[in-house]
Image (cartoon, rainbow, N blue to C red; front, top):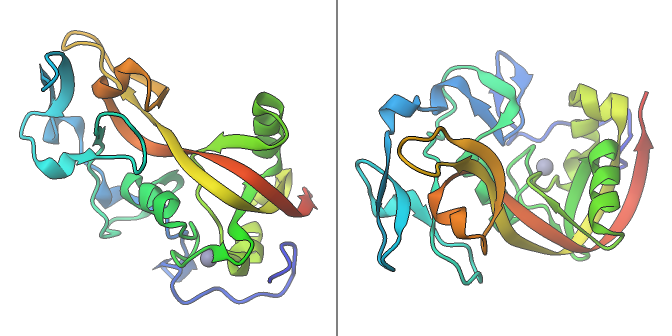
Length: 228
Ligand SMILES: [Zn+2]
């Protein structure tokens, strides 16, 4: 296991680069996004007699079924995954974010974040305290994917906000998808509203999902790193 605040570390070879600088595996690149006019949406009749959001030129790959959840398939925001253009350091690529959370992959290097004791996570101290305060001491919901233990010191070194705010390094025994962060389109005439939507909420069928949300249960804290 790496020491989260260590001063010496090596950057894994699988971490992408841009002009020689390491870029988190999960980051979105400018050439990967589509303008809304390139992927127009519509409200169409659903199989159950209601209505649902869909692309105007639909394909079965537009939809994603949450594993183990008893809910309709979710319309997912299309992005490319070819890392063209330049990195948008603050944004997650929607496809990679979902894959990281469902396959327990590290958001920094893209490799497995699983250990014998659960999946490894690194979270801003502020986000940690807000989530714990909101949901209680033994569970939390987040769209922030895992970080493998090899990448704990890399992430703290490369992320200014982790360095300044501090971080909490922990492992999680259970991570269940529970909803999405997405754009809810109530009707053809109304503008989309960015919201957290749980899978069991009725307006999930009128949501264009951007990020997956998971519930973390049974976590064990390994280190708390104070900000500088
Ligand atoms: Zn990693």
